[in-house]
Image (cartoon, rainbow, N blue to C red; front, side, top):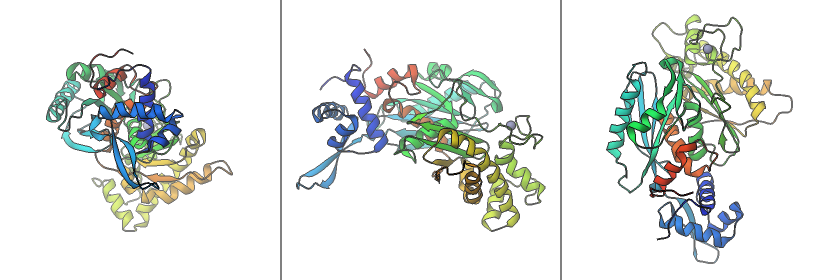
Length: 409
Ligand SMILES: [Zn+2]
């Protein structure tokens, strides 16, 4: 078998994996066109990748010449990753294959504010990893663990997290988990992690520029520009929740007043619904959505007001980044139909005159979607080249993917 090492040929291999990861199954001829290399080079590189189980051939029926055409696709069994979403009181974990298939998931109670939170997270992940093994049933190697948190992470490969709601300041999540688990670990803000799963498996698959807007407990925003998730200088790009939209507005969980989240986050919806007499104490956003679905005008008005504030605010970032579309996600997205019309109207009214229509689409949402994003961040590593978020973890992820221990680059 031809040896897969990470020399110059790796550039073409990585580019080829990236094209297939981005566009889905493709013929050799189309790959040569996309990569702007000769068909002979594509033939040579794909032969090695097939031998190593990273690619597989699929029939797509007879071509015009009568011979069945063959498409190349990423092999799901080439690699797996574990993703975990750390919330204040719960851990959600998934194991996912390179082709996006979720192999298993789990939800368990957790206390993120505990002084032993990192140690308990490591024990939990170690148990979850053991169930899947280092090499899965199909022979797929575990490429690493992705962790997402509702906070700011300076660099995913270093994995130092600030999460105000957990009381984490400079928490060494990445270093601690790498030491305890012995696998590559990437840590990221939840909304940016979600952008990876949209990029690889969701609405962003065929697109280079899009934005992700999340609603739910918090309000989040992430931008993908030229197929890269934008992080900014400190990793805080997109942290729009606590931008002040109304001076002396309602008190926010962060201690400030009039933050975007105090209008469009769950707490904001609940406060507005209670003061309008729509909900009583103890009733939550589920009840608010029920009432809106039943056509209750006061409940619909609560969504209308929140959506109007959000649409107005988002016009700024949309103009700054000019995305092809805005993807709506987050646990609150199941009620998006109550936001949709007012949000679009408000967004359109606040965009510059003549600005092109920006489609707004709702992502399919599952309780495990955040954790899938965390796993997708690891699975994106072989597909995203040297400028991806994996940084110093990249060579170790690739070593696991290529099933070789020593790398000479
Ligand atoms: Zn705030």
